[in-house]
Image 1: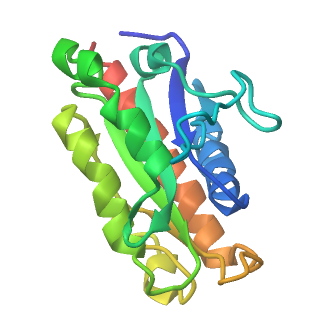
Image 2: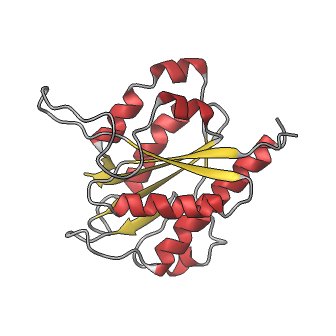
Amino acid sequence: MNTSKLTILVLFYSRHGNTRKMAELIAQGIESVPGCDARLRTVPAVSANTEATESDIPAEGPPYVELSDLKECAALALGSPTRFGNMAAAMKYFWDGTAAEWLSGTLVGKPACVFTSTGSIHGGQESTLLSMMLPLLHHGMLLMGIPYSEAELMTTSTGGSPYGATHWSGLDGKNQISDDSRKLAIALGKRLAETAQRLAQHL
C-alpha cells in the first residue's frame, strides 16, 4: 500500500482571474482530503507576434507548468476559459507539446477532471469542457465529472455540469462565483483526490 502524500496538479489558464478562482476552489476540495496536496500551475499566453516572449516566471500567481509536473502528479484538474466553445490557445499550445509524454505513457491510468469559466452561460461551457477532455483521453487518463448525487447540480442556474465545474463570469467578468458553483467545484476537487487515493492504494 502506498502511504506517501499525493500531489494533484491543478493546471489552468486565466486571463481575467475567474478561471484562476475556480482552480483555487478545486484545490480547496483536493486539500480537504487528508494526504493530498494541490499543485497549482498555469501556462504562458501565446501571441501571433513571433517576437513576443513571456518571462520564465509569471508576474503573479502560480508558476508555469513544467513537463515534470505531469510525471510527478497522481491526478490532474485542467481548466481554461472558453474561446468560441473551445479551450484557450495557450492551453492547447501546451498540450500540443506533450508528444514525448504521450509516447512514454506518463499520464496513463491517472484520474482527471476539467473546469471552465465563461462570459455567457450558453457560450460554450460544455463544449469547452469536452475540448479539454480530448487530449486527456489520448494520454490515457481516466476522466471523471460531477455526479447528480451532488444536489447543487440539479438547482444551479449559474454554472455546473456533469462534465465538470463551471462558472458564468458575465461579459465584463465581474459575476461572483455562486454558492452552487463554488460547492460543485470543491466537490469535484474532493472527488478527484479521493479517486487518486483509491487508485494509489492498489499500486
